[in-house]
Length: 127
Ligand SMILES: [Zn+2]
Image (cartoon, rainbow, N blue to C red; front, side):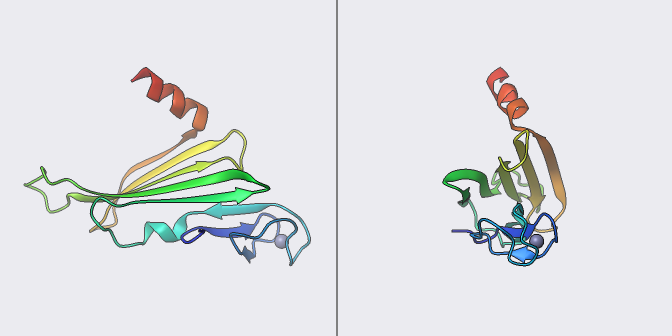
C-alpha cells in the first residue's frame, strides 16, 4: 500500500515505483528517496486516519500517517478543518520526524516541524 508515497532515485532523480528495491533501473546505483507528497493534496474527510508503511529489505523505513480533523468547537472560524501529515523517516540518519498541518480549505500550512525522531520522543516523554 504505497498510495500517496512518491519515490525517486537519489542519484539520477528519476521517479521509481515506491515498491522498487535494489538498483536503479536507469543508473544502476541503489538508494531511493521517498516523500508523501501526494497525500497532502488529498481532500479531507472528517476524522480520518490513513497509515501507509514503506518497507525495504523487510524493515519499515517510512511510516506516513494522515489525519483529518475538524474542530467542531471552533465556531467563530470557517477554517476549523485541518489536514495533518506525520512522517517517520528511517531511511536517513538520524531518523527524522516530519509533521505538517494544513488548513484543509485554504491549504495554508499552520504547523511545520522537522526534528530528529529521538528528540521528538524525548519531548513526548517530558509532557
Ligand atoms: Zn538512478
